[in-house]
Image 1 (cartoon, rainbow, N blue to C red):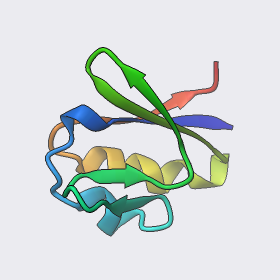
Image 2 (cartoon, rainbow, N blue to C red):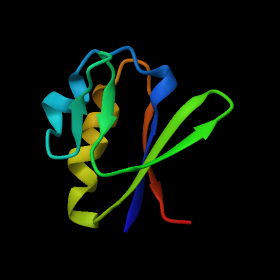
Image 3 (cartoon, rainbow, N blue to C red):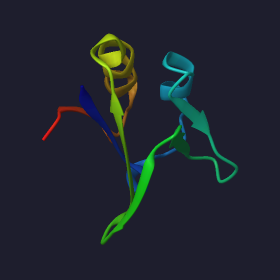
Image 4 (cartoon, rainbow, N blue to C red):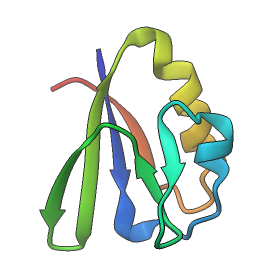
Length: 79
């Protein structure tokens, strides 16, 4: 298992993540991306979204991270 993390406060709403990995990402009413079925946490900078993903979903979400122009999506090893 891995942890998918979204630094939502950095999001500019380009939609690349939702286009690349629509099972995990969607565009919200405020124009920014949202990680589907995630835990939301208020941090000093804004909202941090996290979700566990299975190994089979790593490549799809790494593609979403790589397509993000502001690098606010991260695929990390589980703590």
